[in-house]
Image (cartoon, rainbow, N blue to C red):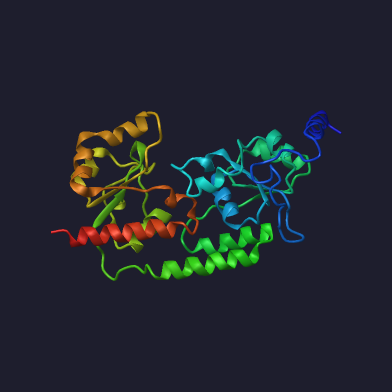
Length: 291
């Protein structure tokens, strides 16, 4: 036994037979009801794997999610996440939660994942969602990992029904652009572009010469005068990247009615993107109805 494994096992034993309790299992709450053969203790360590796990987990099955998921600025399920133990993605804290399964992103900390695997913990890295058509497949993937296949199929049917009700208009509507801190924008190949065009907008990002890094100069944006500018909801605090969005020329366009915040429903490509799409459709209808 390596010194590291001995140390972690010692810490686990010191935590007691019940291990680390979470708000969902402490205080005499009902025991988990995960299906037989499914992982009894699941830990997610990434914002996006958190969302799918929160949607699908049986009561008590999901032991912990990442602390980022409790932030309502970035997480579409912040309220649900806050009811769980929150982790910061370190191998030590996750190991002490005694998980049967750890869900991670391909970009999660490789050192932490390697350590967990060396300690015998099953870790599965799940690719993110890149387009709307990926969402049913990703729900099935998480459903299979967590033994919640039936629940996944229920969510898929609901998502496909809701999406079909928001079919793209036959004609191209108002001109729109996504403009994030540091001037980053998103064009073809992104889910944001797919949401815009499905809602009936014309994404003008590729028309006004973005840089090789996907950035668009403020001057070019202002001269293009789009009908809709979609921005991130600002985080608390201050940064130079976000400060540029307060430029008077940009604020003048927003004040004229062109501003729209993306919100957490845009994050991670979960079925919650339907709410984001519905908000865009309503925005287009208002713009087209304006005199």
